[in-house]
Image (tube, one colour):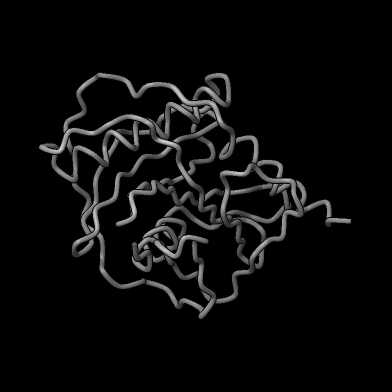
Length: 207
């Protein structure tokens, strides 16, 4: 039987980050905001590799982090769930079903903003509107890699999940989310540390 703490993490990720309900991305124009990210991790990373079955995306986990074995509890779209030793931060990699055709003349930034809007629309629908966007949609460039980014909260802003979306060279759409958790009863890292972890994992994503 799965440890209650781990089961709580998996169930939370399934409800908030999984699901199969999709809506068309809003047509509202979003002024692109480009975020500068370091091409190198800011914290020590382990040799643990996140890899999709298709082999079109890999990433590294921070040192000391462990993979969770959900034993069938998670959404089929969630590819990998991993957590820090304190069970206060969870990294979730998932597949995004994105059926919209994007115009070939669109820039990478425009395509990633559209993908980010679609990902959040899915999140909002899945949580019956509980998930609220925090801030605005952004893009980030790391070498030749372009990411769409957004933050959301299901707790009125008390806890913020950071998300990055991207499209592999095979045309598959993925999302990486860093979720702060209180199910383990541990004190959350300070916001600056959470941001460092998010940026460091994102810096290792190759697609």
